[in-house]
Image 1: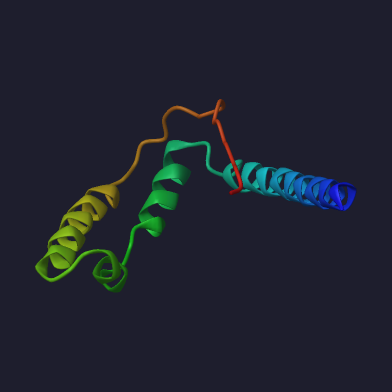
Image 2 (image 1 turned 180 degrees about the horizontal axis):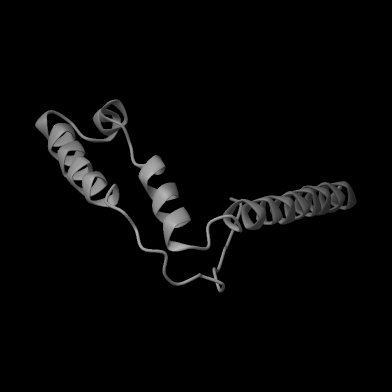
Length: 97
């Protein structure tokens, strides 16, 4: 019985470990496209939550207040961006629970 438990535990550990490596590689491939100021700003702009998503996290008027502050930030992000530094050393960490 102990041997069976040990084998199952090892099987679960190895399976989760290999899945974590695949996820890490996918993350690296995805973020490899976002190394410049323009592309990172575009990613952030499109990742900001909608009002409906804010209402899931915040209650009452807090959702609207938070969303309005995001809209102000988004308006500043829509200003023309000067191409600047290229971010070569981007660290990506992934983990599984």
